[in-house]
Each structure stands twice: as structure tokens, then as C-alpha cells.
Amino acid sequence: MRARRHALPAVLLSVAAMTGVAVTTACTSTAEPPTLEEAARQLDADAGELLKATELHLSSVARTDDDTCVPGQLRHFVQAESDLAEASDGLLERLRALGYDKVVDDHDLRDEEQDVAVLRNPRNRLEFELTVLPGDDARVRVVGKTTCYATE
Image 1 (tube, rainbow, N blue to C red):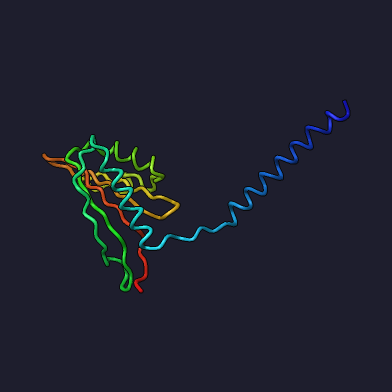
Image 2 (spheres, rainbow, N blue to C red):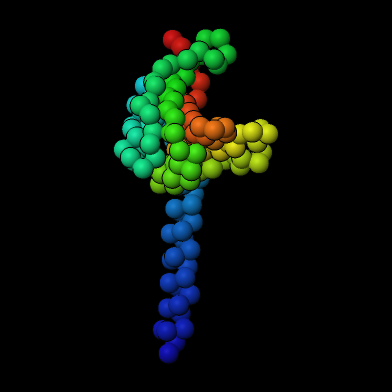
């Protein structure tokens, strides 16, 4: 009886100690950000995953590096469009499955004529912006980009 009474607190203390170690390790480990090449490769791979979803009707992806950052910095950029405005829900689902979190709601960025959603992958700092373009030929523009990197 006495052993049982002490067994439960001992188990709880062991679990708490292990959890504390895991939390401490997770909080103190700093992940090194990816290089521009690594981030560009991952962005292209994620855009390729979106292209594989035939029900989204995405055009081929245009890939480029742009210098719209501050002078001396560069980022990788991808862009595609879907001729189906309702593809935005499928795009959101696919991006979430790839590890992207919605960081901006379309109500925050809404133009009077355009709905916008921004998703970011917290591990590699990649970002996708989905914009529903209105009109007779309503469509969705998908723009993915890395953060800005200093050029060498």
C-alpha cells in the first residue's frame, strides 16, 4: 500500500522532468535559417506540389529571382494562376498540408475587389499569397516568395 502511494508521485515527477527537458531543449534550440538556394529549392518544390493538384487548374509556374528588396538583397519568387476562383479553398488546404499557416486574413488585406490570404511556413520562412481576382474571368493568382537575402 505504501509503495503504491509513493509510486504515483514518482511517476508524475519523472514525466514532469522529462517534459521540462523537452521544453527547455525546444525553446533553446535555434534553427539556422535556410540559405537562399535551399529556400528557393523548397519554394519550387512546394509550388510543384500545388501544380500536381490537377483540380486546381494552375498554370505553369514562373520562377525568378527579384531585387524588389532593399538594395543589396535578393529573393526567389514563383507565380502561377488558376482559371477557377473557387480553387482558392483547395490551395489553402494544400498549403496547410505542406506546413504553411495562415498569417493574414483576407479581411485585413481586402481590396474592394480582391480577396487576399497570406500563408507562411514557420520553419523555412517561405510565404505564399493567394489573391482572388474578380471579374468575368475570375481567377486566383498564387505568389510564393522567400525572405530577402543579402547578395554576396
